[in-house]
Image (cartoon, rainbow, N blue to C red; front, side, top):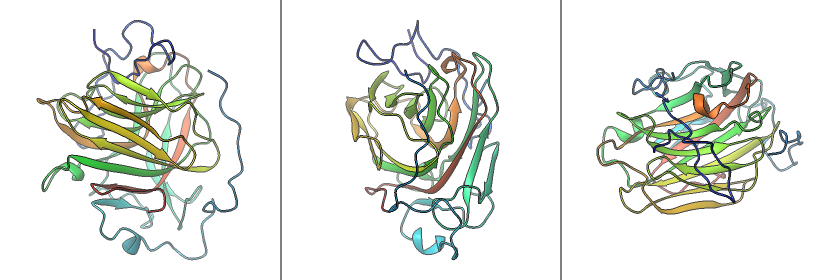
Length: 280
């Protein structure tokens, strides 16, 4: 029995019927050529006064300064997607919702029928090319979600996957009433117990320690409880991790309820082997 990027959980966690995520084939618009063949959604909440404003500020954020010293870093202040770094479909850059500066990446997913998958994520593989691949690395992103997934659907916000077998990898999932870390390599998951907020910016920092025997995943956030998944397989010997994706990702077997169209905004993305926080 194998799962494809679903979340396997037992009695205290979310339960999949049968074997979940069969037949998912990845995303064709990613740099590696991959193909994508509970209570209600959380209420809107106003951002507290000490969080960055959800407006375009009077002065453009200096991305060149803010990104100095990081392996991968983008605040999208060029006003257009850097296609030398990112790949992905249904992604634009606009000023509708901005964490800081003038622009953020805007990701759109169409409405999906039951069993229909769709991946709309920023993808990069620079972390895994051009030098020594770090054993441990961090993915930091600020996200803005007007809505959460429909009940019982499982949405990938961060996906770190292998090249040859796109269903192998490590994930941060969100649901209508919860969120989770998951490794498809070991088919293990850990719930946070809390869903992300809607209509406000929130931060996720995902740590991945690569190992074919005893790796770990961890999540920190400004709104979600710190969560970890330890002593798990996070990478496959034959298919090492190869790319990072951030945005809206649905596998067909994770759409068990008709899913309305979704938007997300992504800003201030950093991927680096050194520890990251929401303040970076």
